[in-house]
Length: 449
Ligand SMILES: [Mn+2]
Image 1 (cartoon, helix red, strand yellow):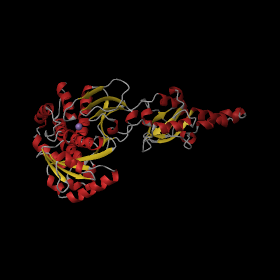
Image 2: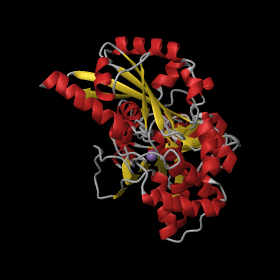
Image 3: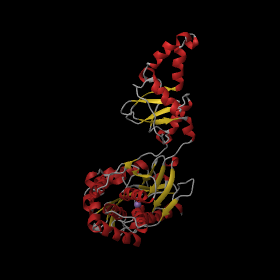
Image 4: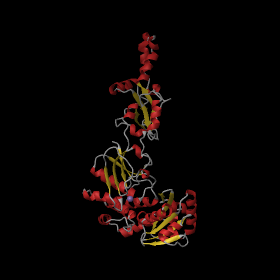
């Protein structure tokens, strides 16, 4: 059976990975089928830390979900022969299963070559001299039947595909050749099956469930090739289209994990201690331990239930998570600035705001001068009006906003005078709800009135 991939957004964060893993577990216990938790990019070390601590394996990293040769394979038993088989055994197998092309494999299931019924027929024709040697046929036939598969199999000039090759590429090769069947192998040359032109017409796309995003530009590459079965999200509704109606749960709560946890609770599916801890981690990181203005009453009450099951203290575990996240010592200045940088467009003008969520501003602010220098470089190179870096202290609920760029004066207009290129904002933590709207307002006045 083909698996369904439960996958979060590119640049995976804690919420998207936790939601993918836990929703996979949920689906596995409520629905038939095989579900695989996946991430649309490499897992950062803070997420690995959480998974390790709670006892989870890392999700499969899947950077492209486009249709591949593997998706063309049909689910059926693989019939094959080995090199030491006689032509009598081969003939019996061919007749019994009405085979046209038979793969030859070694005892470890690796692909060695092919035998086609046509090739087999030609051996008889050629050996009998196209009929001229008919009088000698008993001895000729005896000779043929003494041969082994190894003597007649075709090993050269074959067209075979690796499972990860794109279907488009495979189609080109198939249309330019005249074979009936094409073997498919994995990277270790293990035989996986045969495909034919017929399979191209029957193409089965990968099936996915998206969590924690619904916009195409945030989704894994190749998403337009897939069949989206469900979306569970808490972001604005974007631009992905589906062919059929789907289950789409979008709700303005603080974390996708809140929605996944709610499903477990609603259906009374058993939540293990580990899953409760994982869901709690997603909620704590996305809501900045309930301090982000995106936090809702539902996030808090669901987290309470998860606290009971997991035995984790949200304050303590939350602090541990944020200590792991964005530990500045692990990052270069450029990484600190660019990892969560978002661009905003207003008419012709572009500005950018980046954010670091931390429990200790001082470590980052020690690097103020070099950060400012890199920010100025980025601004110049990319032509931003200005670049703001929010250094947000989750526990104190305050932000130091560093500003670089030619038009940093606009930020002063929005938030007051800066000193040393930064402004201190008490009670401000949300880029989306508090900072960006104020900047849009100032830019609108400056450029469009
Ligand atoms: Mn989220």
